[in-house]
Amino acid sequence: MIFGRHINKYYLHYAPMLLLGTAALFMVDFLQLIIPNLYQMVINGMNRGVAEVNGQILAFDRSFLLDRICMPMVGIILAIVVGRFLWRVMFFGAAIRVEAQLRNEMFDNARRLSCEYYQVNKVGNLMSLFTNDLDTVQECFGWGIMMFLDTLLMGVLAIAKMWRMDPVLTLLSLIPMAFLLASATIVGRYMMIKWDARQEAFSKLSDFSQESFSGIAVIKAFVKEAKELMAFKALNLENEKANIDHTRASVLLRILVTMFVESVICVILGYGGYLVFQGRFNAGELVEFIGYFNAVVWPITAVSELIDMTSRGKASLERISELLDAGPVVRDRQDALELQNPQGGIRFQSLTFRYPDGEQNVLTDITAEIAPGEQVGLVGKTGSGKTTLVDLLLRTYNVEDGMIFLDGKDINSLTIKSVRNAFAYVPQDSFLFSDTIARNIAFCMPEDPIPREIENAAKMADVDDNIRDFASGYETVLGERGITVSGGQKQRISIARALMKNAPVLVLDDSVSAVDSRTEKVILQNLREIRKGKTTILIAHRISTIQQMDKILYLENGHLAAAGSHRHLMESCPGYRRMVELQQLEEEGGESHV
Ligand code: ADP
Image (cartoon, rainbow, N blue to C red; front, side):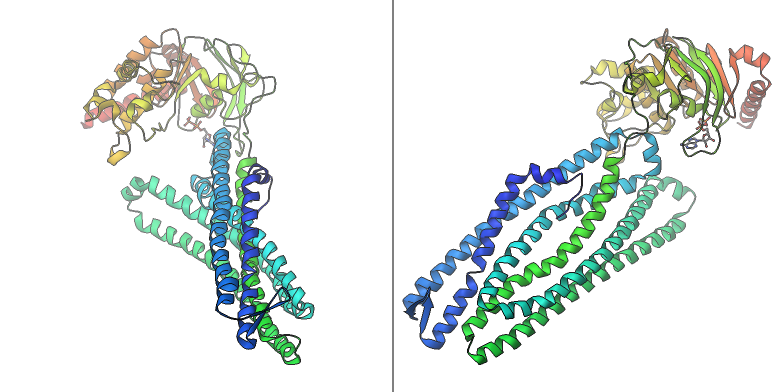
């Protein structure tokens, strides 16, 4: 049984199922405790030739055995089977539903979180929350409730019956149980710490595996398989140690349970035998008492399981709660307005930005204006802050008020959704889903789009021919049976996806770097035509890519070194000129080598 802010509500939600399960469990426990009394009647009947039922003395014969022992026994067994089936369906059914609902809640919150969260929490760690931790919580809910109630019901019923037979013998039997509970609580705490360490180690291992599989091409290209294996072995060893530590504590608890249970049997046989010797108990009654004690052995054993399970469940629920409690760092203000009819006008006003975990400013005092419909190139060396600048436009990180304006409105005063809706973005590492190419291109469309529109977008991104070359064309499922696309094709499919959105502002972050110069020319020409009157921001390394743009913003170490047309920059900005000349030299060098 497990409690916590994120799980308590489910006890209420599934109260009818849990109550029905409890009733079935109570019936099973009650019926199980009738059986020791039947043993007593049989043993005493065999010894004396008569049996005592509710103060009545009856002959111990065939009809007694049939009517008073066998028939009730068959009835009890059948009722127990039905009862066990019922509580299993109720408790485990509720637990599975809770797991599914928690998973939905987790996914729902995860999709709301800002990019920052995903930079700190790796995918492997998140995956273990959705698998391992959620499984543990589910187990704790279903088995946990059952074990807790069974321990309570069976314990109380059996101890009451034992007490009625002989209070002193019952008390003597309970002394070792008190020791058991005390030691189990201490070991349980220790186990929770060990479980936490175990889950941590497992997360690290799955993080590493996930990253290794994703980067397998790089590992192979650098012949670093052996290094990876060594690193994996080290993490696996850490995981193994954490598992052993937890299992050790778990085994210790089980040994303690067995030891205390056996010592109770010693007490019963010793003191109970003495009572028989004194004539206060007969043989049948001693067997009946042992029968009741046997019935509480499982609930007592369950105490250790319960403590083990609860400690694991608590640790897992805490980890899950961290995800559920995490809030987006970038969020709408209460008075945020919708951006109506966006035109694509952008203004940066003394924009200065430092990453939340960064030590220095990545962008410093940037002031620039992009008029609606303008085609803008963004250039600068790697690390000069180009991607950061467009990320800030999309509100991936928080910026101070009065630094970025969209259509004259501070982006902080607008809803994140309406700002992002105004943009179509092709990120640097264009990601495609394991779905058909058509659905990848139509990702932004709310309903099934017309195939012609998808094909048009693909044509504009100059990838239509490539797609048609696949046996299934636009219905080709990426990632299935090893079907992958080249870097250039991936970039162009991503461009097609962004074009489908037909947003007021299109941002392409180094999106034609993997295509040849002929294809690049075609795409740029198409962009000029279809984006006429709409703002386009193109981040590029090759000057040839942005040469024709209306305006070029040239960044140097996070500063806006110059802004204007290519010709203007060539005349006025030595840094820009140097970069152009360097690229020309490289190109000429490259050509002379060919
Ligand atoms: P560019 O796109 O021009 O190559 P970026 O905008 O990607 O440059 O990066 C600018 C600087 O910001 C770099 O020094 C980079 O290391 C740093 N940077 C980028 N992303 C992060 C981040 N998430 N956290 C901290 N620093 C970052």
